[in-house]
Image (cartoon, rainbow, N blue to C red; front, side, top):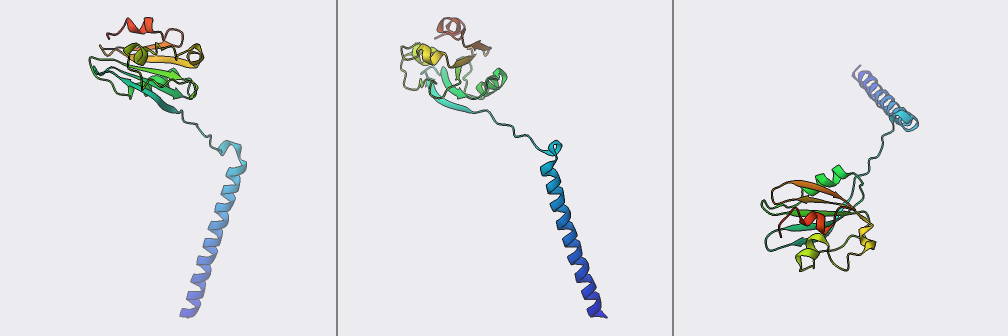
Length: 159
């Protein structure tokens, strides 16, 4: 009698496992063929720091290559970068890694902060998306590519 119960129990377990396995396989096939149940892949934006300039007074400028065109995303990224109260941080965004200037080795304020240098040619400027500036009063300003000039940005900050 005990042997018979053991055989019945074993058969029930085997049938249950087999049924469960077949059921899972069918669910997977349905998911693969049902377009309503497919998941969309969301590509994450890239932000790559190419250059970083910092003065002795703790003013900072970053040059960032990015794949996004979304101004809000760029501003959110810029807000995560270093800022010293009473000083300024400028973040320049570019859409080409090759044409994102490296301001790390600049020694002059104009060149490091505002990219006012002969090497920052129109070839680079055409790949600029815009610039974010957090001023000495902690005001935040976004400059589109055409308004992100030394003259416009300089007037809102102190050297």
